[in-house]
Length: 131
Image (cartoon, rainbow, N blue to C red; front, side):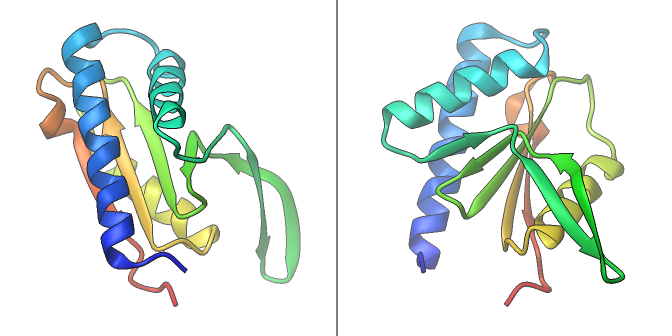
């Protein structure tokens, strides 16, 4: 199991790379472009990256195949959801929280490449129900 310092370092690395991409490329592209560029940069640094994998969930004793697809899963411990919209709303953070709860993860990041200031479009989500 990875320690708190490992996850914090992964979160910081992801944020730093996202900020660099936002500065170099700018806002306005579709989400999938930012997702691919971020995934590529993280992989170059040795991070294990899974992209667009389907998630199967069990709800009330019934299995639902392909309930949703996440954008990125880093080192099997950090979910990253990417947006490219003008402003995040409360529903976007709730979406990430639901995803990490259903995947039994503790941490998620919401990165909005559409915001004028990248820092304003970044949310760190913690699943308080985890483990």
